[in-house]
Image (cartoon, rainbow, N blue to C red):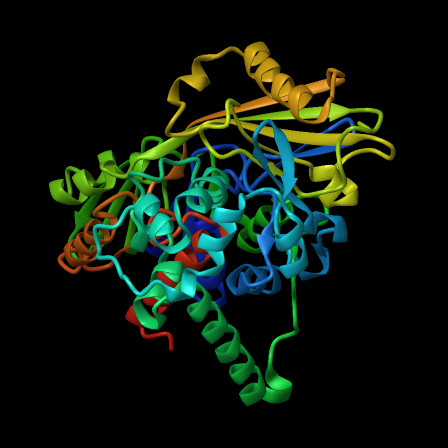
Length: 457
């Protein structure tokens, strides 16, 4: 009998497994695909490195840096090029550079004078919302209607590919929501957070972690992290092992996989919610129903590889498109302008995103039509009229969890239900945030809970 079985070898399950190994537990990680990492993988072809999922993580993602340390991947960490700090938002048919400071805010024509006034007077608004706030209502209350549609709309397209009207503000944007609830506004809350971080650094003194800023990835792509975790796990990681069923087995759990029956004292379910739901329904119907209620946005990624540099593309992170601007593309990243090893010397790699909750039918387009959609928008916005030399289209019918109205209540119900299922834990980026850092943190939290239960501390 294993101490722990982790169902799912995406980044959450890998992070969980790595920490359990460090604690000395006998762990087995089961992954249905032939490669570890889920969407945190990198495709390499002709010198181009194309991400299957996230391209970067922020300097504040402490758990991701911790995982790099624990897996030996820390030497491969690399900051984004300085030009990646330049980002664009589409408005009125053209690219506008996003604000980077007071001077760029004054000079920018991204917002009208009225929109700017609404934005800078945010601290004067004292009205506070309630738990039923949508992201749309929250940002409009804080920023005014124009900035909410343009700035927050672009932000929501980039993070969630979601519908601002259905996303829950307290669930989808807990930091910003907390700024309003605790400090009366976004700007006040941001200032307070910076002060608190400085205070903590002073208190830690020489023990404070190194200062980091900007965005990061790893040499060779984000998949380097997944491979490093897989190396730590070694033969404890089983690939091509799809879980068919789980069930209580006395004081432990039984897992059916590929005609085998495995037993464990504790089980961590790190599969996506739509895959975990049918496994749980025979164990606890309500648990399965709650997991099945988590909606995931469909997204297509269009990787466009250019052997020769595309001169029309600015040196920048990329651009995002608020809904309502007359473009179907959600946004385009410029990976080869962020990290030098993403394309061969003299080449370019661009990655477009299509679909989301407001354009669910986009994934029904064939690869050629998806490519034409992104290329057409690029031609309108930057004048790029060259077709790429190589193309890779990736489709995800269930890509990004949508933290919609009632999400926090549903997650609390999950936790309450799990109290009646001893030894069962969950991990995944649908629990408390959809980013890479949230997925890693959830895996580490599940591992810490298992270690505590097992009395290994």
